[in-house]
Length: 251
Image 1 (cartoon, rainbow, N blue to C red):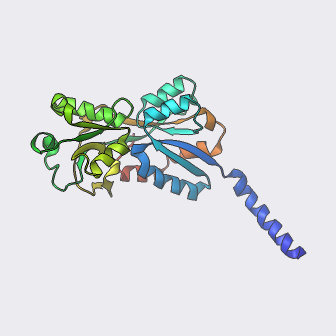
Image 2: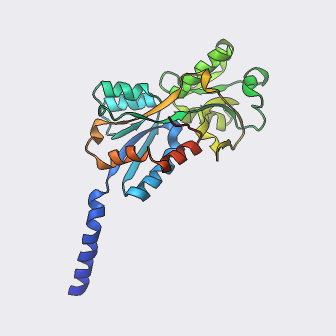
Image 3: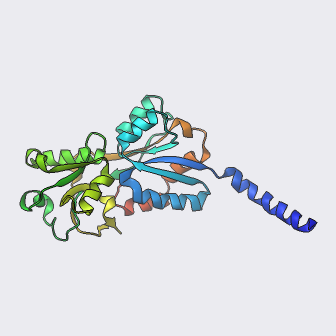
């Protein structure tokens, strides 16, 4: 019995270094980055022992929550403005902000061949509803409105727009058939670098301001080793491979 206890004690002692260094990080993630971040979080835990606890939503809503004391360590935003604002307001660690991905907007339909020739589906296809994310709180929604303005279709589509709270809800509107078309994130409909379901038109980057997505270490995560490790991991080659596989580009 004494020998068994000694072996058990040695086993537990061997685990102590790993346990003492492993930690959890609370991450607020823009909903467009759901799929790649789920994959990255899995690799992150396997490679570091740290666990990333993910919450998904609109960047605008996360801004309000963080200002009101939400317990996030890291913000992965869908834009660069909100992280910059939080940093300037003293909610984030100065100098920790960096771009982790450049988003891509796509006009998408779950119907095959529905979006065949660039944006002509908006003028030549019969549809009642066009889904976008809320342009006031979601950068992809703002990019969608800029695209419609570039195409000269702001007024003609106004009565057909249905707004999701975030890009995930906008995608759901289209995927469920409640809207025939929608502007969504390429990451939501891409597989191995190509649109894998339905049909879509990848909006040229020149049609809207860049969807530069910044990461920020928030004050709560300042002394959290898992938070700092996650931000470094996002800059790694393994994370970059995942990010690019979901249709994002990198600076």
